[in-house]
Each structure stands twice: as C-alpha cells, then as structure tokens.
Length: 401
Image (cartoon, rainbow, N blue to C red):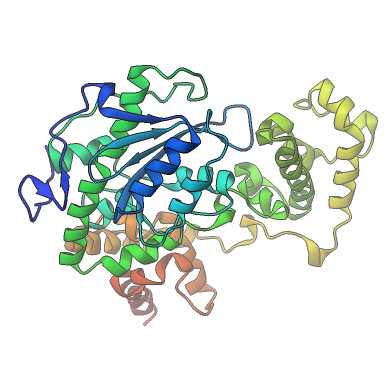
C-alpha cells in the first residue's frame, strides 16, 4: 500500500513539474562530457535553491572508490556529469560548497564518502530524504524506489547495481537508471519539508544530518581500526593488544596501496595471529589462514607487530567489550526499555530504530549500572533526549526505588 504525504500544491511544487512516471528516453537527459559544458551547467545550477545529487562509483578492488558519474537534477532537467572523461571538476566542486544551494541526496552516507575523497571536502548544505522520511513516519532506512512510490505513486525500474560505471560509452539503459535516481529528489524534498515543518521536526533533521560529516565513519584512526573487526569481542586483553597493532598496520597499508583491507591481509588471519601470537618463522608457519605468499612477504613484519602487542603495558592494553559489565542478568530490564521505546515511537509515528537501537539500550543499561555521568549515552542525547532518553532513564530510576 502506498503512503502519501499531501503536497501543498497540485501538479507543480515551486517551478518544478513533478515527473508523471519513469523517464522514457535518454534523449531527455543532458550528458556533460567536457569542462566547458560543465562550467555552463554550473552557472545555471547556481540559480537553483536546491539540486538533487547522486553518485555512481566502483570500489571492488580498491580502498578508495573511483567516481564514475555524478547525477544532478535542477528544477527542470536531469544531467549526468561524466567524471571519467572530465579531468577538471573545479566548477562542480564550487557548487557543492555553495551555501546558497541545498544538495539533496537519498541515503547519502556513501555519496558523501565518495565526494569527500574526490574533492577533499563534504558538500554543504545537505539534505537526506531517507532520514527525513524516517522522521515523517514513512519507515526506517526506506529505499529510494519505495519512497518515490509512496510519495508519487510511481514505480521505478529495477536498479543496475552490478553496472561498471567506469566503462564507456554508457548505454541508454545506464543513463536512464542513473537519471531516475535524482529526478524525484527535489519534489520529495519539498513534500518532506512541509511535513517536517508541520511536525515541528526541522531542528531534529538538521542535528541528525550533522552526524554524517564524521570522517571516521570511513577513515578511522589507524590505531582504532581493530574496533571494526567483529571477532575482536572473542579476544582477551593481551590478544586484543596484538590485534590492535596488526589492524593498524593493515589500515596504513590499505590506504597507501589503495587496496581493500582484506586484500592486504584477511580479517580472519589477523584474528588468528592475535590468538596464536607467533614469535618466529616456525610458529608463524603454523598460522593456517596465512597464505604462503603473505608469509614470505610480511612474515618479519607480522612477528614484530605480534611482539610489540605482547609487550604492551597493562595501562596500554586496549579496551575490550568483554571487560564491560555483564548484562545477562538485566535482559528483562533491557526488554522493558525496548517496549517503552516502541510505545513512544508508535505514539510519535516514528520507527523505533530511529529513536534507539538495541546496542544503544545496552549502553544506557551499562552506564546506569556503573553510575556514570552523564548516564545517557551519546545515542540518546540531542533531540532524542526529550523524546525518549529521559523517559527511559525515569524507567530505570523507578526500578531502583
């Protein structure tokens, strides 16, 4: 069933005619393949209050993504900027930083990463229709196609996620798919803005969008790279110190050589090295997941890193999730907090996941039990504090009385 947010106008919103259906022909698109054409388009875009933006990229065998295409929609047309054939994207970089032009994305996390790597800065200002849709009660992490269907009763063609966006020439099917990803962004933005204003949630989304501009989302500090390894929770503190050294080295190598982390050394190999802690050629040869080529290439480095981790002082041991308070005896309280969250979310017509995740509830429980100040974790501060955080804290305090 389609969910609709009423538009304040009928067929037109501002100067933009809402598309009646998926684009039928690539002839309606403008493919920009030269610096001069890009400069001319940017002069036009500067007169727009908003632009719909999306990116297509490839990163299967690299650490840094390769930008293949940038799609742009203004109030009247859709444009495809060919970043493979245009070397100088300076005019577009200026537009992305123009504070007078709002850049509208849908689920912009990866787009922001790609644009940051290409231009050295995040676009400003930004609006994310996926975040806005959640705050308007349309569902958590709603896909672009579902949002378009909900707002405009239009079904878009299936995606082309397996397309090689670096190959030229682009087919008409590729061009049409790419353009569809931006043509509905401005009308969706305007409808969602009306609803956010009606609900009094404009400040919420501005606060939420600021969390997207954290470089450590995709470029963690190398000495903290170990925290992204899922199996770290199974390691003892001394083993974790070894893993920290190994993961830091791998992170630096991946960036330097522009390789995916697991192409340098697989995650399971790091964990096995941290567990077994080989200190010589014979011992490292018994690490089953370490390939012979990697053993020959990195053997000395790996044994040195293992030794450095083993020699870490007690004060230098990294924090381990296993060192946190055991919540096994508090599952019922956490479940009650979850039920309270769901009740609050239902009353506010919000997805419960938007308010707080289970991980956030566990953090709250630990901080409360440890009597840490402030008790509310970062995930429950800001706009969430008055909406849900204070009520959950009141529940915990009532249980102690």
